[in-house]
Length: 106
Image 1 (cartoon, rainbow, N blue to C red):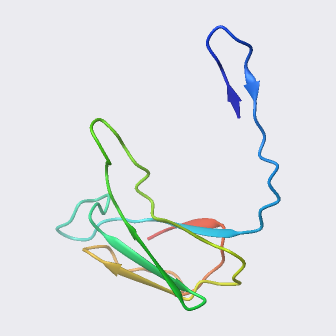
Image 2 (tube, rainbow, N blue to C red):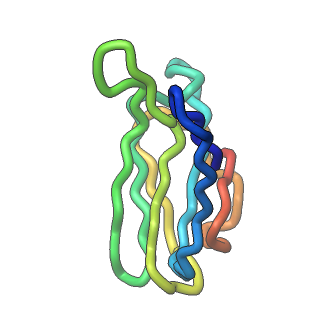
């Protein structure tokens, strides 16, 4: 990443962390009668007996915007095991368990 500082030389930043942790994310699409961007949906992901929750929100404060894709992070687990959706979201059409380090679209 390059950061352009005012009245100074640009700074080049590089991530050199040997982190081996995993993540998975979702791009949700709203179902019939709900917002197309699935705002208000809640997602639970279970992996290794641990459950995490993420809510789809459009903004956090005045004139702000958030990434509307729920994002989950874990240490070194081979696969996640189960999704659970609350809210009006289109049914999940992929395998109930899958690989890490990628985004899925429903």
